[in-house]
Length: 455
Image (cartoon, rainbow, N blue to C red; front, top):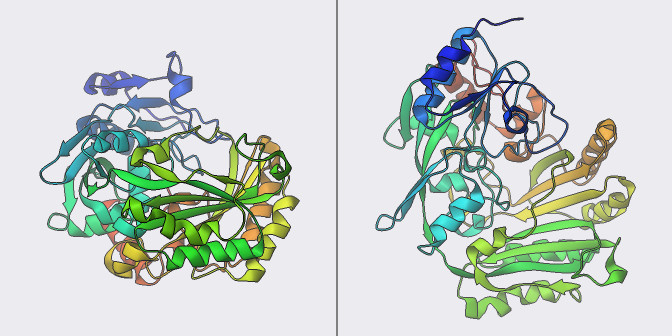
């Protein structure tokens, strides 16, 4: 269906730039991180501020064009682009304003987690923002934010104090506990369903030197379950991420470990660095380490190193309370069955500050679960999608996924039942009512969509 939209008029209203298919930068700016999404929007708006965002939202609503929003572009489902619609590209909006005395920062939502962390590290402060530097701050925050500081400072949304949001009617509003509190509740875990965040005010924790890095162990059922038990017993100053995978030919690994199952543990200990050896001792005792790179470091160093190459990806995830030995055995049995060049089961122990917030305090409603499990396969041939998706879902089902809910930040394209399960109990109903209030026409539907309540 053709849409009559005066692109020249829209271009004239923007401080930023509007790219169309004839422009030299168009092909680059229409791309998202993961391969397999070769979408051709009518135009890409590289917005310069909230007024530009509002202008594009109004244009999309009035013309009936589909609207996509891209920050870092890491959506597993490729939601940052669209065929024939309009794309709001936030990447030019990357300013960070730090209030040292107040211990907060205002960040525009096109900034990446890595750049934000470098900016706040200049005053020895940090906000927990996941584990990948190139991810956009908006996407990870609105999904919840399970990162390196989760057990000590909570999810990213637990450190969100306010947000400036462009709603479906093109209005810019401030959402906080005291202003638009319902919207503030919804955006803390409800993704971009309720508007486009243009600035976020985030709390900063006093964090400079930490003890962290990677410890690589040979994987066995006992090592996997022992790692989880040690992480659960550790002080809340320690957050861990364990990746069980087939070892690639990394230079820090002995050659005999290449192609064999390993557990790559990432650590961030924000307590007294002098106590770190005692905190890490239970993990080092699980098996003779293949590589031990845990050391004192500045917090931003956790984001350094080679970024993941863009590939095709299949993934699914779920929350659990623990992982039993049979599940650990299933991981090791089924990892070699995948033909994907990279396949991984990621295990993140929660608890600590995450669990101190009531389940109904935000739209992220899995506070009482102790473990987050993500199963992923990265591959190079688009024609193998069904094969790798089947493996991912099969392994997840055999180790505990039971339909009881996952984390939208790591979900790909899913049916409504899966999205519904990500918002358990009364959370889903409240979100649908607020969707009807803030976006009754479902303009913001390129996300893990929450449909407006009927009536």
